[in-house]
Length: 232
Image (cartoon, rainbow, N blue to C red; front, side):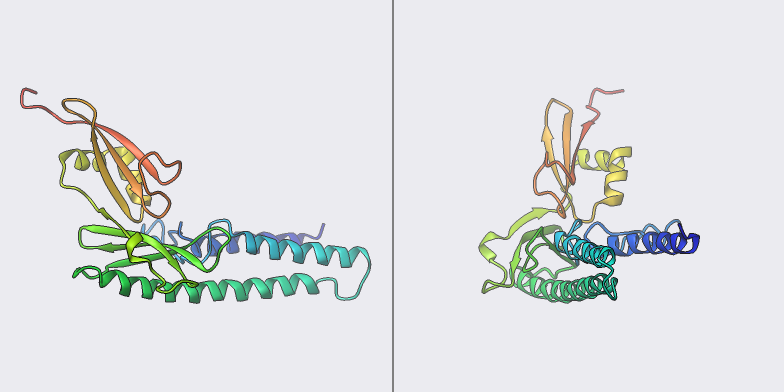
């Protein structure tokens, strides 16, 4: 064990982790505790299998060359890093171009301008992206594909409300669970379900990762009780 090498490895690991997290749709709050602003790269899937595969092959090949006492054993690892850098750069350029095309296509569907766009990567397929656009009072979600013309199938675009004008929604947003979820959510949509005379379930869905209430990740349901006219 060489302390200097261990320190360098730890430094690279701690620095590269949040940088790589910034490249996905989850994001990182780099300015905490001074600001809670999130930064999103929308470049890589949260666990991108191609990055893992290329880097793992680089490590395996370098260790094998080292065991066989071949010359320049670190060469496969450096090649893997170079290939990963090219892949990430290509995904960043592709994602930026896809977001511009999506914004243009969606804005043509209505008179409302597009205020924000996410063209998020999907698992395994770098040529397909799931998008969310934010417009005045609503979201639009759909799929973008570089292999199809047009790249956005307008017939499959779904429109969802941003925040309905319902008192239960305000109560849910002010609750502890609601504040925490909305502090993390990027494109939250709400659905109100009445379960009793004054009892409601407010379903909050972050459209980055979920499409409907009850999805395993990116959705919560908050019970709300509204005061009735006879309440003191």
